[in-house]
Amino acid sequence: DTGVSQDPRHKITKRGQNVTFRCDPISEHNRLYWYRQTLGQGPEFLTYFQNEAQLEKSRLLSDRFSAERPKGSFSTLEIQRTEQGDSAMYLCASSSGTQAGQPQHFGDGTRLSIL
Amino acid sequence: QKEVEQDPGPLSVPEGAIVSLNCTYSNSAFQYFMWYRQYSRKGPELLMYTYSSGNKEDGRFTAQVDKSSKYISLFIRDSQPSDSATYLCAMTRRGNKLVFGAGTILRVKS
Image (cartoon, rainbow over all chains, first blue to last red; front, side, top):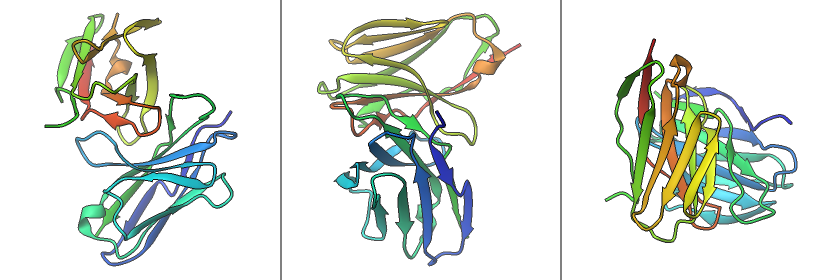
């Protein structure tokens, strides 16, 4: 049972560029979550999917952010026109979701650095 | 005021000590409570998971939830240098969106 996999581990880009991150959840986990973590803070919820349906989005997810999970397996998070404030660790988590309150398991994140 | 409050530390203890980590929260609707451990440049790793009030023990770790006081704790017995990490409490109403504390940095000195 492999864990949650995220790619790339580190992304460095210039302000104004678009970036895309990928998350592969634990196999057969039908719920997938994205969080953002800045230095010295706990992760903050961005959005989550149950299968391919995006069920909730945080107000933190501005219109420059878009997430997809087209076939209910892997997910992508895209940030358009990146800004300095987007520098953070982007974490993906998954859970089985067959019963209420199943624990979420996290990947090691993608660290985004905006130059 | 944040929904979940957690002392950022750092907390420094000698090897073998009992460590107590705590969080308070304001939303009485939270039902599921978790503790995660996070090493530098890694993702959070689930340590303990409890539903509603009560205690749960797993090896050297004990989690306590007191919903009447809106207070949760994690105890680590016989602490080891490898326990040095950031400990994050997290909670949720229905098991979807997790709300985290800021994390407590723990340093166990050998």
